[in-house]
Length: 322
Image 1: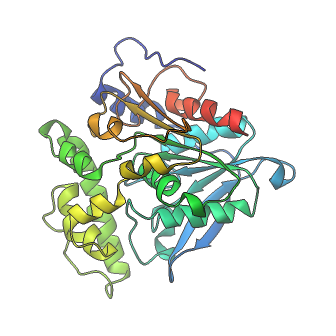
Image 2: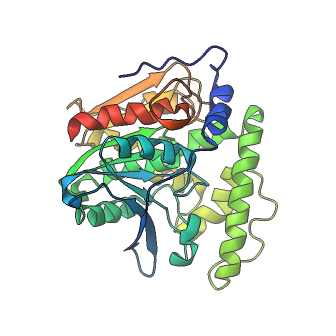
Image 3: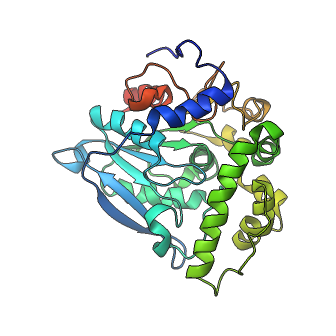
């Protein structure tokens, strides 16, 4: 395994987070992709983008990538991880959460952190392509992947090799509280710009489902979740949404090899919200916390494009399970 050794002057939570964007901004996906549409609840459909290794599809394992808040299948951290996985012989399947990216027309409803059933359906579809698969989720997608492994483990395909969560917000309430810190104002503005824009687009497309102007004046992710995410997802309020959608309380039930990868200096995730959850006695779940790395940053010399060391660490964990 390549050790995590950031270059001089690149350590620090904010620095690693921002350098992650900078170093990976030019990463592109060079391989042909096939769109797969997966039905879920009612008229909701999910969009997957699959790139296959040459030869019989059942001969290679598939790596399913799940993006974070505001992302989609073209998120650079996913492309960097997928590029390394492809070079090591994996099919690469990039999942879009409900309505993300090019899938807005496929889902009348918005995604949220607690839709582990969507992961179950995606993996069931992937199991029809190849009997072996693994999942890597990033940030919100990491919570979703770990939630599925813990809460819905008995519904997952038997060919699931392992799960990796990079910078997972395992306690959504604690992470939203940390995001409200003044030092995190740039991240808050970035997320809220994406969320307000997504809501406006969704409301224009489905005025029968979404009230106009509900996003106006919202300045924090917590306020957005209180006004939009919770009520439209069937939760009483943001507090109930966070409590029922956080993966932390379900980690002890995971019966599949899993890696939880996080950084001590993640500016958006309090370290206690990552480390205080009990892990299964089986030892199948490994929690690794690096001294630095920021939020989905992990910028250091790596075989993964964009110096994305976390992508390489994820593959080093999953490759021996094939």
